[in-house]
Length: 268
Ligand SMILES: [Fe+2]
Ligand SMILES: [Fe+2]
Image (cartoon, rainbow, N blue to C red; front, side, top):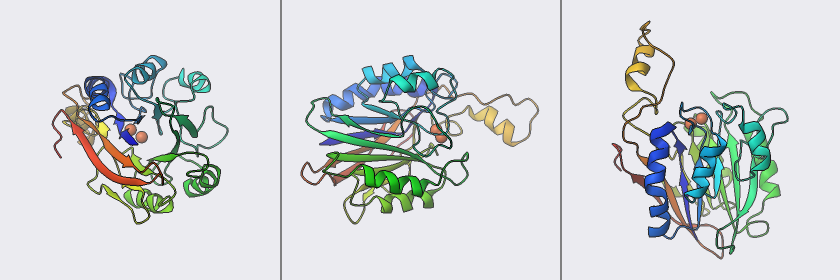
């Protein structure tokens, strides 16, 4: 079983790089299941629309995860009710539409894959305690009983919270990756009990920017320049960023994890 997980797709540039490389990667590496974080994929980098989600599915994505930007486009609250392949963080406060986790089939119908989307508590909008939410879901989706493989997208700001979550799920999930910071970390590895892990898998977007936003304007904002306007995405050549996991069909755990970086200015 080969799994691809891609980081936050940022605006038009991010969508372009996904379109350019995703189906090629799926064919070349015989990828069985693809998860992509779509929370910034709208033109302005805020949220996702139905037509964008459908384009991702058309290009081979199996499940779209998200984060704090999930509700930035009004239509998403209705769309998520009819499209269960789009997830929102499981620990959002109050009753939110949609699901924060689910069990999905691979395209060849051979395997069931559990996908869990969580959002951190530190330096993020207010959410339920993420470790409490993780405990509950851990009891609901059991590896090899409910799903052949289980993947976690932990959308969070700080490295410690993400790393702790990796250890929490070690041995009971196939992979735990972080998203949200838009910068990939270099700690790609398999944890003690067999879970593939990377603190953040970066963004699919233009890295010649400030986390995907136009760098000149962002800098003006930091410098308190009155000519600064609202943030808008950088539109240069984007990099596709994520990880690939080779998982053992018997145990559902990771045998190998590697970083995937394609195009644009980012280099491994
Ligand atoms: Fe993001
Ligand atoms: Fe985010």
